[in-house]
Image 1 (tube, rainbow, N blue to C red):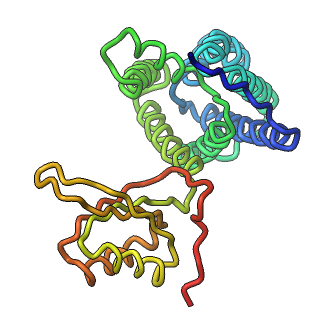
Image 2 (cartoon, rainbow, N blue to C red; image 1 turned 180 degrees about the horizontal axis):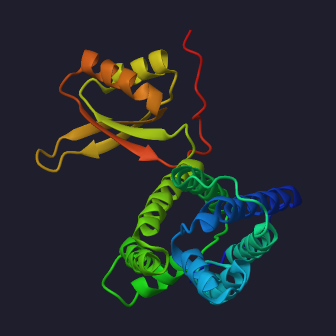
Length: 290
């Protein structure tokens, strides 16, 4: 029998923080779209990109299309991910739509295509990243891709790529192929900015080390890096020997020092390092080493 865990409501302070940052993120995306991209006929991908094309062809305000085209995804998001996500997304899309309408007649920040592409992508990506980090979404494309993924033999990433290829291809016929290429560049910049905002600049790394000198290496990591370590029991599949596995979390600035410690104590040790998007709890806080 499965025990259903009751959903715990957010505290008032956490709810207020989420609402404030979603509003800020949506406004930043609106600024990126209306003050950099749209006036220079540069597109974003996804539903926003489709909305920009439709707004250009019909003369209807961009914010109207952004809101209307995303309506089906509020319901899908509610069913697939949850009520909190759907409401956060509704708030974000509503603020984004209103922001684009209010900024439509505000003088553009720059008419230089390269500056508009770079800074538009950065501002837009920062806004989207903030909203995603605080539990919402500003575009229904990913929800659409998750739904289509269940019926098509393609990954979510591949489906999003196909959708955007179609959008940027259409942009080439509507705005010209140079604008389509600028749009792809802006999309790439925004995509990388989203990653930075979500994971943070101080990206953590996990390290897995297998060595006969596990105790010496563990003590050295504790003393010279100020990082705690965990010893795990492992077994070699080929030899059947019992192994001690050292697990620790470091920052990317400490990776080189960790490698030098291992090279010094056991040059033949096995080492695997991977990126971690977020670290919470435990004793990750760095100890003083002096």
